[in-house]
Image 1 (cartoon, helix red, strand yellow):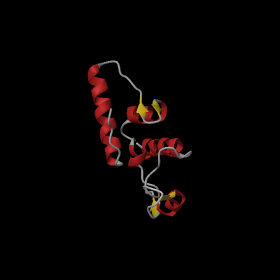
Image 2 (cartoon, one colour):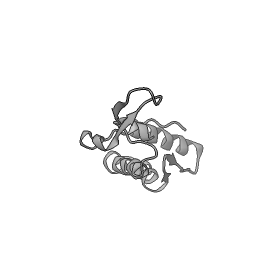
Image 3 (cartoon, one colour):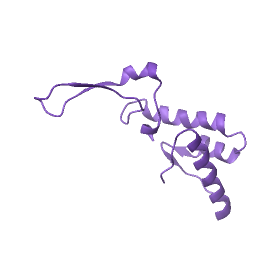
Length: 107
């Protein structure tokens, strides 16, 4: 999930890294453009993005908004419905809503 979330350009400098494959190789400089796994702020940023999507993209989908607000833990959306048809509808709505923001559901 983290690699699907771009960091604003003005904050990318805080994700500046130096890398080399061996101790003899020259250093290469990189600036990471997406949220990086292992950074203390990564879980917060991921959940904050989902909350933003819930607030701005879910006017017509209260079930999606509820799932993103209350049934999401890290990168898992844990929600169910009374019937298979209702579950499939929610699944489709979640996939479409998140896809509009560039996020692809994998599970």
